[in-house]
Image 1 (cartoon, rainbow, N blue to C red):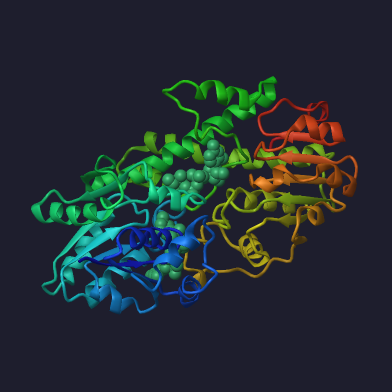
Image 2 (image 1 turned 135 degrees about the vertical axis):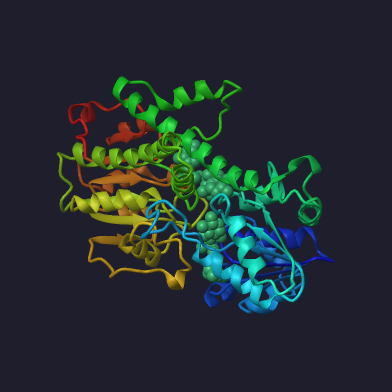
Length: 481
Ligand code: UDX
Ligand code: UDX
């Protein structure tokens, strides 16, 4: 019987371990974390992360074979398999600043594992790490091993937030990378046997360590590239009168392209895409491949362009000034069905509006006021530290309100910006909204979830990403930033 311990009770570690515990009732799974608040949350009725279906999974196995604890050293010491799912922030200073991963938390986890281990262990990389991290971890463990033997595996996570439980139950694939030695292959088999309890064998792919590490970065880079591609086309659609939804639908019918991940938006967010591409860029530069680095960097370039293009549309269509004007922001999470705000495009859009002196009123069904204020005060890249170690700046004295419903946010506003595709925003009473707002009343739909024609019938001036422009917007072209 295998004992599993996972260091890091976050968005990745928590749901992954809960599903392993559910599917393998005879395996003891302990999730440990340095954050007492996080662990208290996992042991309470209100889990620290919002994920559809997760409550049920946790309820069914917590206290049976799933445990959450801050006693990191004890449970790591007792485990056969140690997953590591700790933060890997982007470096903000020194060599590789703004691109390379800061492996401080990973390195200290490895040193701690070496300190407390008295029996052989399999160490599994779960957080996204730069290619060749396994080599560094192996060296730390080998030099501090005191006779204990370690095998490092890379088992990257492909779950998407909002569908994490579904993705874990029925993954497209599980990837396990290991050393091509007999010991390495034996370790791969141990982990493969865990997943094989519920994942069909042909969906469990085994590779060498470096392929597994690189596959994670490459998968996220490809996904992000699709969004930047459709977003680039959205700008051209606005210029020509084409409709990006029609274009995406047409090209998605080609089975070689496929229909998914072609929704134009105000930009992608989330904890992985930008960070992983920056990692990829840095690795390419380190290996003397500047052309490859530039190619991938441009995926982020278009994402930044899309966010600033959106802000420019808002400002330019409102007579080139939003100073003192109330702007309602609907949605702050980086996508629907999550309360996660890491790298959400809403941060950059709100900063852009505030930079132009707008008064911003924000509503999101899952994001707290405290979180919004933290995000707006935080420096770029500082979010990826354990919460209690996050360097938080002075709370900025900004004209920002956080409301408990969409109508309150829209009250007296000149414009509504939809930044997250929450279902409830599709079904709002937009006539009521219109009546509450200043005139002319604008809607800027950053997710293409409302019907522009219906809103125009009510009286709104509507901008929707990549859709034919209202005459109003044609008359007031967005100025370059
Ligand atoms: C994590 C990383 O944040 C991400 O960069 C990586 O790509 C995948 O793994 P996630 O689970 O979403 O993803 O992060 P988060 O929710 O921040 O959880 C990380 C947890 O690790 C935190 O709860 C933190 O307290 C914990 N941690 C961090 C430790 O227990 N020990 C440490 O030394 C550092
Ligand atoms: C992503 C990967 O999908 C997952 O495999 C990996 O393990 C972690 O990173 P996640 O960040 O949770 O998952 O969300 P995802 O659904 O991929 O969306 C990322 C961003 O892209 C969101 O801001 C989303 O709104 C945006 N997006 C997605 C679009 O703008 N258009 C699309 O068509 C799809």
